[in-house]
Image 1 (tube, rainbow, N blue to C red):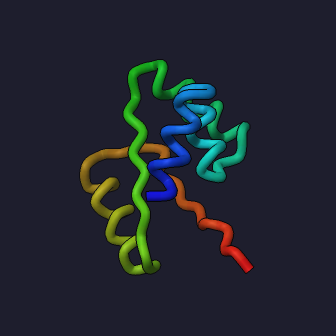
Image 2: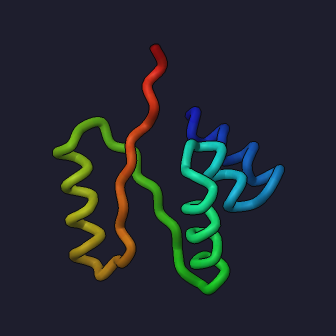
Length: 78
């Protein structure tokens, strides 16, 4: 739900870049993704609870010829 809320806020204030930055993606990376979307690519984000789930998602993307697959981690609140 938090990611969806951040995406909604970001979309209202600055499109894809704002949504991604709102979810914690560095601005330089968000701009790169935005350029790819404008060129017709599709951006898919997957939240996983474990490294096993992350690896499974990456394998699904690879098996379906996805490119530019990257992973990141959320900052944890202390």
